[in-house]
Length: 236
Image (tube, rainbow, N blue to C red):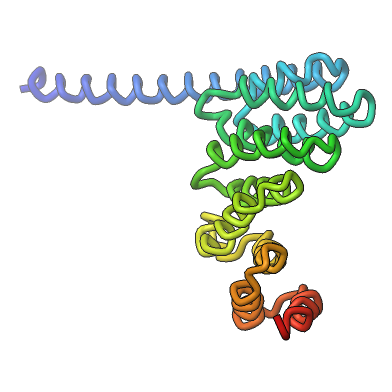
């Protein structure tokens, strides 16, 4: 009887010990990874050439995102558009694992924005923003990408595509952010841009409808501009 009863007890004890050992190994591994990340981060701080390898190696971390933003700012100040664009493109192409997806999308959006605002390359911004909208589907970056696409297309004379980009922001307002916010940061601006672009295209009835809908739906900070546009189209 003692042997029959004792055998399961031995097995239970052994299983428990194995589980504790496995947990201990996982804890040790996490600690080791954190130490490696911290060491890499310290190296990147002291040597700017190590920032990009750090960003790609730890693409799923907040530290990598902060390093990306800081490196972009430093490159813009020191070397200008070409070097900064090349850096963002390398991150976009290199952060391809599951953990790096968000950083890859952010790099793509930042590159499109840089082309539009700083490099004054409208056609390049259009292409980069198109690519960013494809990457950013169902993410919180989609409205950023569509806003940049709309502005770039409008400046490049691609007015129908610009209108479609603005309209996507207006129509997807309830899906702008997956974690609780029902409004996009770009919603009011996109709605106004849509109305003004329709006015530019001579589609006055649609422009008035869009702008009046904005006033009806929202207590917008852009109300003076909306009212000015409506007054301008009053007899058209």
